[in-house]
Length: 409
Image (cartoon, rainbow, N blue to C red; front, side):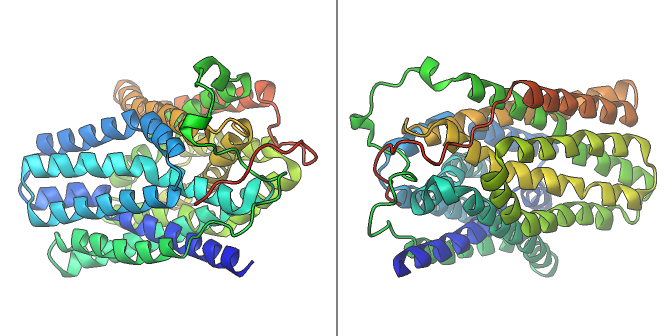
C-alpha cells in the first residue's frame, strides 16, 4: 500500500514536470529563433515540420507503447530526448540542428501523454482511473502555468537561449519523480485490471475490430471539437490586439492563465463525477461550453468581458483532459490496444486543429471575425448533437467479469 501511495505521488510530480519541460517549447521557439535573426519563413517551416511529425507519430507511438512492457522506461526515454532537443536549441541554433531537434521533440512528445495515461491505469485500475486522470490534468495545468511564468521571466532577465537550458535542467527532477513510480507489488483487483498483454501474446490486430461504433462517434466528435476550438484563442487574440493594442499582451496572458486555473481546480471533480454519473453527462458539459464561448466571442466587444468568456475554455479543457483517456480506456478494455487507440484519436485531434486555423483565417478575411466565431460555434454545436444523439455511455458495469492481469509501470 505504501509503495502504491509513493508511486501515485511520483506520478503527480512527473505530470507536473512534464508540463514544465514541454512549456519550454511552443511560443518560446518563435521568440527565440526570431532573436537569432531567423526569417519567418524558416521559423514557419520548422514549426510546420514539427506539427506534421506530431500528427503522423501519434499512431506509431501508441502502437510502440502498447508493445513495450515498461511504460516507465518509455516515459524516461521520451523526456530525455526532449531534454536533448532543448540543449540543441540552446547550443547550436542553425537550421539543420533546429529542424532535427524540433522533429525529435515532437516525436518524443507522442509517447509522453499516452505513457502517463498507461501508468495511471496500471496503478489505480478502471474504477478509480477517472479521478486519477483528473489529478494528472490538475498537476499538468499547474506545471504549465508556472512554466509559462518562469520561462517568461528567464527570457526577460537573461539571454533567450537560457529558456532552453532551464527546460533541459527540469528533465532531472522529472526523472527523479519517475523513479518513484513503481509497479504494484500485488495484482490489482481483477475487476479493475486492464489488459496489457505483450505484443506477441495478443491476437493479430484487425482495424475493423478496433474501430467500434462508439469509438468512431467519439473520434468524429473529437475532430469537430478541435476543428472548432483550435482557432478560437488565436482569432480572439487578434481581435484584442486591434481593440487594445497596448494592453493586448497582458489580456492575452490572462486568457492563457485563467483557463489553466479552472483546469487545476476542476479536473479531479470532473474525474469523480465521470465515475459517479457516467461519461456522457460530463462530455456533453464540455462540448456545450464551446459553442457558447464562440457565440460570446462573436457578439461581445468589451475586451475584459472577452477575457472572462475565455474562462469557458477551462471547462472544455478540464472535460477533455479527463474524458479522452478515460473513454478510450473504457472502449479498449480487454483489447491491449489502449495506447494505439489513444494515438488514433490524437491523430484526429491534430487533423481538426490543423484545419481550424486555416478555415477561421479564410472566413475572417472573406467576411469578418464575427462570422468566423459563429462558424466555429456552429461546428462545435454539430459535435454536441453528434454525441447527444449517437454516443452511448461507455462506463463499464462494475460487476463486469474480470479480464486480465494488471500492467506494470
